[in-house]
Length: 221
Image (tube, rainbow, N blue to C red; front, side, top):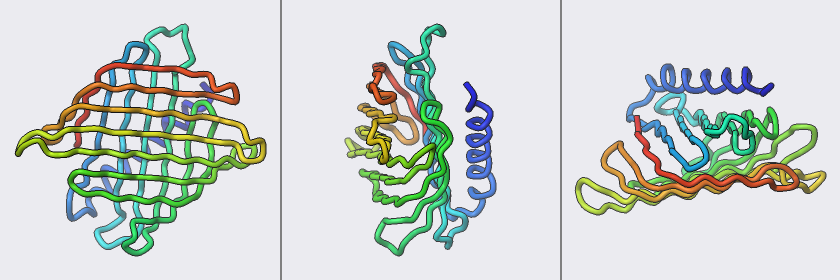
């Protein structure tokens, strides 16, 4: 895969910078959730890093790394890397931010991107949405969202549920490039979460599809 060196460099750089230099600037700890799902077809892994540049800065770094690897090495459909890294600038207290960065995508390629982010978060709800314009041999539009609902059951346990989606559409040729829908449902106790998951991925103009169903566990570092 030609993108491997670029992908690894971007991901390692984002994680290193976010978890070291930027982390020292935080007055309160922002969790770094890492998740692995053991599915019937493949192994899925996800890491999300979000850090402000300083306690008073309007700038933040958001780095998301999503990997999927088939158990069957002869099968390539379903193998995937999606790794967007963006710097955001907060627009007041509305939850909106301007965003710019790049995405390394094993199916679509390396793409500079710019757009708008909106985030809403409290103890029970997280809603993170990106709407981006991407450039890779033509203009592409992207929507990326992570939506969590974590209602408390008692002082120790909470329900954990998540809808996560991405859709990349070519603008000039109006063709589907890449999309996915990931669902999670389970329980959460402190930083630990676990449950069942389902992934649906689609690739290219012909929308070749790959599914994966299994169990997941996650930890908020």
